Structure formats: C-alpha cells, structure tokens
Amino acid sequence: MRVGRGLGLATLLLVGASGAALAQGSIPDGDWRTIDRDAAATRFSPLDEINKSNVAQLRETWSYPFRAFNTAVPLVVDGTMYFPAGNRVVALDADTGQEKWVHTIPSAGEQPRNASTRGVGYWAGDGSTPARILVMAGSTMLALDAATGQPAAGFGENGMIDVGVSYGGAVTIAGDVAVIGAATLENPIGVPGNPRGFDVRTGRKLWEFQTVPQAGEPFNETWGNGWKGRSGTNMWAFSAPVDLERGTVILPISSPAPNYWGGERPGTNLFGNSLVAVDFRTGEYKWHFQTVHHDIWDIDMPSAGPLIEVNGEPAIAHVGKSSLFYVLDRETGEPLLPVEERPVPAGDVPGEYYHPTQPIPVKTPPLSRVSMTYDDIVDAEDTTPEHAAACRAMWDKAGGYLNFGIFTPFFFKQAGAPPRSTIQLPGGTGGVNWGGAAADPRTGTVFVNAQDTSLVGWVERKETDESYSFDANDTDQPYDRASVDGKGPFFSFSAPISGQYDENGRAQGPQAPCYKPPWGELVAVDANSGAIKWSVPLGVIDELPEGKRLVGNSGSAGPTATAGGLVFVGATNDRRFRAFDADTGQQLWEAQLRANANANPMSYRGKSGKQYVAINAGGTIVSYSLSE
Image (cartoon, rainbow, N blue to C red; front, side, top):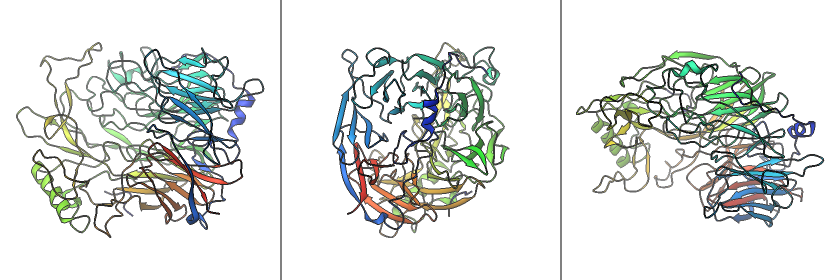
C-alpha cells in the first residue's frame, strides 16, 4: 500500500417544497435518477443480480454512439435512459438502446446551443405536472416532458429560461427546486460565480447565493479589500448532494481567482474552497467548512461527496483535489473525524498573503502523493532505463525542486536570477477530481479514484507597469505562474518512456511521471474510522515492458459501487472498464473499450427486469449485462 506517504447571504425568494417532491428521496432500486444515482449522491446501486460470483460473465449488450464527445452520466427512470448529446437530448429504451425520442435544442439565432457535457436532471413531477428532464445549454436551462421530449408547458418561454451565466454541469433537483452553479472564467474581476435555484415548474428564479460576501455581510472581512467585483469562487462542480430530510443542498464552492496569486485578497477568502450548506428552498446559509484557506494552488472543489451515516450520525464524506479526506456532520459542518489546523510553509512572492495553517485530517492520510525528494525518482526497475535517466536529468538540470509536503507554495523568481522551482503534489488535475467518491451507505465505505499528479514551476512578475497596484476595476495582476521557458504554464514532472526528445525538446512517445509508481489507485476508506481498508493500482500503461505495466493511470472520473459487492470504474486512459471486489480490491472483470471511459459508470434495471452496467466511453454509451 502506497497511500499516505510521505446568514443570510442569499436573495430570499420563498418557495415551498411539496410532500410529493420530498418523496423523491426514496427511488425504485432499478432507477438511476441523478448523475450520482440519488439525491444523496452516493453513487451506490442496490441491485445485486450482477455480483462477485458472476461478474466475469458480463458482456456488452448494446451500444449507442451519439456523435458528440462528453463525459455525461446517463439517467434511467422506469426503463428509459436519458442523456445529453451535442445539441440534442436523447431518450433510449434502456434494455435495447433504441431511440424513444430525440429533442434538438433550438439555436439562438445563428449560434447553436449545445447541451451540458455532464448530464441532465430529472424531476418526478406531481399530480398535476408531468415528469421533466432539465438540462443546461450555456446560459439556457431547458425543461422537457420526460415522456415525449417536447418543451415542458409552463416553464419559461417554450420550455426555456435564460439563467444569466453559463453552467456546464447537470441540474441538481432538490425537492421542487432546480439548483445550478456558474462556469465563470478564472479571472479576478467579472461575473460572480454564484449558485442559484429555480422553480422546476415555472423556471422562476428563487434565490442566488453570494459566494463572495459583499459589504456588510458576514465573512466579508476575509477578503481584505479584494471582494469588489470578484469573479471565480464558483460552483463549477457538476452536481450537489441534497439532504431532503433537512431541506439542505450542499454546494461545493471552488477557489478564488486568479489561481496562483492572491496578494490583493488577503485573508481566508470565504466561501472559496468550501462546502456550503444552504436551504434548498430559499438559498439561506446554514453552515460552511473551508478545506483550503486562501488558495494559491488552484485546489478547486470538483465535487462535494456522498451523504451517508457515520457511527450513527448524518455525515458528508468529502475528498477533492488535495486528496485529503474529510467527514463532516451534515447538520452543522463540524468534523466528525478530527481535523487539525497545522502550520504550512510560507513563500516569498512580493505582496502575497500566506495563511499560516491549513485544515489537515488526523485519521486518514492523504490518498495521493503529497511530497517528494530525489530518492523518490523512478529507477530502471520501475519503468525503463531511458525513462529513469530522463527523469534524473530533468531534476539535475533544474538544480532540484522544492517540496516541503502538502501546501508547498510556489516561490518568486527575481528578474535575471535562476528560478527556485516548486514541485506541487498533487497538482494540475489534483488527487481526486470531478469523478468524486462513491459510497456504500450500508457500511460507510467510500471509494475513490486517487491519482498522483504534479505541477512544476514558480511565480514571476508579469510584464506590467512597475508602479502596479491592485484596482478592483482592473483585470491585470502583477504576478503569475511560470515555468522552464519563462512566461507560460507550469508543467508536470514527467518524461518520455523512451527517453527521447525531438530537436525542439518535445517528448517522443508516451510520457510517465518521474516519481515512483503507482500513479493512480482505487482506494476504499472506512468513513467511520478514517482507516484505509485497501488500495490497488488502477490502470496500466501498455507501452511499458511486460511485468511493469500495472502502475496506475490518470483520469478524472470516479467509481460506482453496487450491492453485489462490486466497484465499477473506467476513468483510466487505457481504454478499459473494470470491476473490483468491494471488500478486498481484487480485480474481478475487465472489458476493452473503443475509447477511454472518462466518465462515471452507472447501473440500472431495464423493463425486462435485467440488471445492466453502463458507461459513456468517448461519446458512445455502452451497456453490459450477464451473458445468457
């Protein structure tokens, strides 16, 4: 095992939640009604026809290519599958893959409208209003009749409303409220990244939650003077878990912009990098928990996590790009497993604010690599002699890299001076990205795809006037990230397996990380105790020599668990779909795919009564069932 190395801030427009809507908390066991199956976002199917004893007999039953690459998770309700496909929303017979209806989204003049690439939302309706499919298309929310695919009567104009800002996630249905985030740009100044709620029947806006508190609002002081006109700090995550019993939706709010310099926003920057619980009817604040104070690493909040019971207490289990595993009381936001504010290193970028501590879980170690020294570089036995030599040459050329464990800052490069380059771990797409966690609510076991990623670079002065001072009406910033060639993005600490580069320094052939594998693992955590139950390498690199290929592979998607004692996962960049024993981590089944399945799997029962497991692989829905 390698795991663990080294307040009223809303616009309050009231709406009641009907008893019919609250009943959505209990759904038929064969349905998959949200992109995480249920309102609690457990991504757990109670079906057990497919189980440990027979999963090896899974075979492809049907496939549906939909001519639009995305990472959407389809929904299934009473034997009908729904998903977005470019400028269309499609409904299929979930037993056969045959089309039931297709809705083409009307263009906005000459500008086409494409559906969210992440998924759709489903509202079960009530006695007077039929069930609806809701989907985002840029800044337009559409509501369709689930039975016919026609625009939903009474919703906005011809079944469409303009929500004001683009959002690329799935619509979260909370009672009778459609909750969405905001895909605002990561510029410091611009459109707020505020989540909002809308009436599912009419499309009327009900509330908007202010992610950057304004003057006179609680927590405004956590920004210094950097709150004015602030963009970023958004909910770009694709859904939010809903506690129907308590009337709460838990919003994952991402980091402030810009990502790597925050000198103009001194303080902890609430509600950046926070889980925020609000009343889903009104948007009224209930509690928050901040996972990163004053983010200068781009440690976004790509998902919130499943709602489960932990030692008899209502909880949410959260793990994100930092790979730190938190278990919080979902009534109060207080940790149920201990969290300590621990000192972290400070950097030296002029004018930057460095928060002296960060919240670190005590019981569960980081699920991905968070530190590195020279001794951690791969050697020939790990991969290939050429790869190992290229990695050591990269380290030596840089004069080494700075890393003091998690939350190591990027340091300042003086003009004309050689850089001191940080290696950030996890970096880039982080440890656990938007795929997030699945959980078995019966046991409190949480499953994640945890990858090892890195960023290498420093911060330097931008080409701006030396007399620069931050102005809330100015989108410039004095410092930004840089790497080997000066201005430009950070790069990852990886090298070609062949060790070969062309005359322009471009890698020849596939690359692999320069730290020892595994580079990606499927991990099971007991949320009751915080203990790691098991972890296994997830994914292969086929270009490595035989016997060295099972090193883990990268991917942002996550797993799905079932009552059959199985964990299904695609995610890896090796065109495989796998099933593991939920108790031990042993791989029990594997299927070769036509393309990478960078999407979360799902399981459902068709009208036939048969259980299926399905996944979106590069723009094709592939459904599997037990061979006859």
